[in-house]
Figure 1 (cartoon, rainbow over the protein chains, first blue to last red):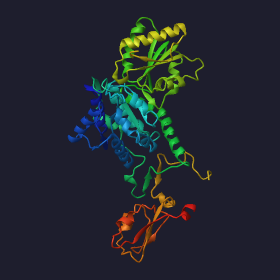
Figure 2: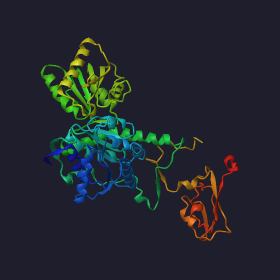
Figure 3: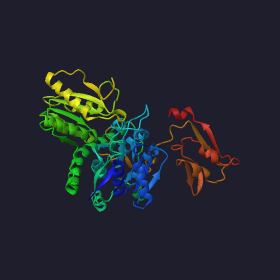
Figure 4: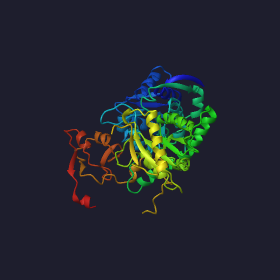
Length: 393
Length: 101
């Protein structure tokens, strides 16, 4: 283990070098370009054994990755935003075929208007394609999650593709200290890839992958994706435990920060969790029972873990960095609200849409949210269930 | 029919089947035109057999002997590749008879 300074993109490329996938097919898109670019340099320098396919679009990137994975090799790609959108047609194919592809993905706004900065509209719009979605708060998590995701996706009970996300520019381009694992230890942790299905290894007894399924079988096959997700919910904490035992850093589906005895909790994903932590400390020093719940794994959705972590709170604010324009708040808000429905005593819950197109989410913004929910806690009155944070209104 | 169908737990994970399952089905029943092979004109160059995207040309002892209409989809590729001077393939509209069947 060595400590170095890396950006999120550099850290993810470094993780990919250590994973040494058999095939990487990628197409450049800001802010994820660097990951593929740095990795392509590793290929040119002979530091990996990877077959790098420089494709002509993200649709082809995901197609080639699916084909390589079906062939029975470890295959990866990277993307962001419009690139992810161009992959949409292929994403449910990867999950439907139960291929353990791992894809670093940098969260960025979707057009229009065109914008290259962070929000979660890209990732959130791909939330129901049967992919595991892991959000990284910082550079270290981006690196660790990428390595852990290989084990998660390739677990024989799971066999579900993963996207490991970082926040565009905020994490992808900012330099932070990174505890890098030694190459040999990564290799040992991820192990040799043993494909469950392999076109290349089925010469003697040929197989068909992705045949047509009509009314009589499609339903059953899609149900099997849910089965992989259910397994993922069980397996992810086990892999993270093993990761902690091996490398010393402990992760889980969710992460609680001073929330056990908190009355006022903000729920968030990604880099904003770090800023919230600072405000929680500030409020705790003033005697306010503030807390944070960070969702690391959004798919599969850890509804029981979330309900358990939030059941003692008085008022909860859920931050969504995407706006589905559905007139009823963001996806994280809606799902967390649903997860709390079965509690005997439900906390009050409000939603905020924030940070679209890379709009800064400052300490002041977060102070105002805690102040809002404390007020709601006192009066019991909510002026609006879903609001905007940091928007000129 | 539902008695014979497997439930989701019994299916192979990930839409994986043994190879060549199309042989178990009649995959040519939706064509709107069909290829007619003319034995008297055919020079046995085998181009139709090579280019057929399915396996519709029946070959016995190295020679084309006919077309298996369970698999011919009427794409017309055999007609295109059959040498013009030979012209042993003719595409004809599918009849109502087949549609009714």
